[in-house]
Image 1 (cartoon, one colour):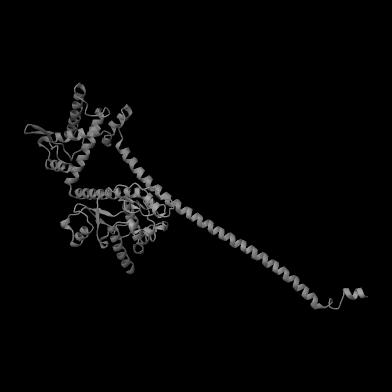
Image 2 (cartoon, one colour):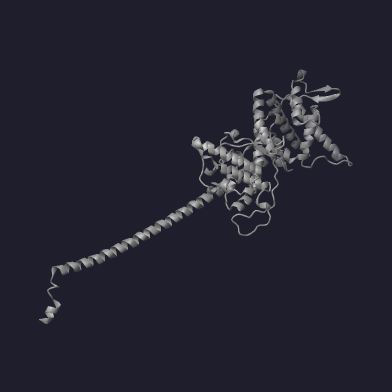
Length: 455
């Protein structure tokens, strides 16, 4: 009985006791479930964070890959242009019969650069037969030929003036016209005969290389040069063609200046990347993204421009540098830093290297080969868009382009990247820029700030 009372007390039979026990058991189960859910949730959060890190890493790798691809594309385009030029200049090079047959059948090919000695002899003989002064430059020769462009009576090929035979080709006819064919044959015959006589004379030396001493090669080059001269004369006699020719020549000269400066800047990029601890800068250089360097006549400049030229200590035979309105201040700063490196300004004079604890040997300064130029006022910048003329155009990165210009030109294609360019103007070391560059960039910064306020 006592055992019974001990094991089954009234308290044990109470409904409340059973309820409390059930509650405690349920609470323990709920706590375990909650802890399990919290653990699972934490695992999910951790996994999401790891995925975010992976995605950020992949995006970074992708951006670096794009920048390297852009640089590779620029280098490839330059190489392709060089190869194309070589291919145009090397249609005839070797002495084998196959090549010579190709030369004979391809008279329009320009092979003159493969035969420099023959080229000089040909040009001299060509204009000698035309009665042009040997000391005249190309434009003076064209002027003389234009003054004597009318055909001779009876379609005569030549005339005698003061005892000298002067040939009169028909430049507006095809090269197959009998008068033009006779002139070409005469040039070839004279060159071939003179060289043959030189080679047959034991006391004389040949005037050309063995590869030049080929009648088919001489004929090919003579016909190609005749076509070139005929095209120049035709363009100069047609007002519309003359205007287009002049425009093309001006554009060609200006682009050649920009290309020269762009190549010079590419040489300075390794030093720039070392100083500022960045990479990928090659992808931001394009011949068509540079300022225009224009010739000028001092007496034609405005008083303001004259004062700027003198203040920047630029001689009257220098250049006038005109910026592009679409370029951001930081991008212009980047270009000026490259120019300064080429001129030996900055770290090469003793400033501490950036982002590098180990001292470097003094850098070999790259020679500044382009002429001095003074900067016109920012208000005179050109509205030329960032249009690259490469086969695969260079697309500007967003930090390179001024925000207001993008606002006005939303269709302009840009790519993300080069985030380090943002704020470069503020980070640029004072000693890394010349006095004139610092003055111009301050002026440009003020002009662009005022432009942004107008949006």
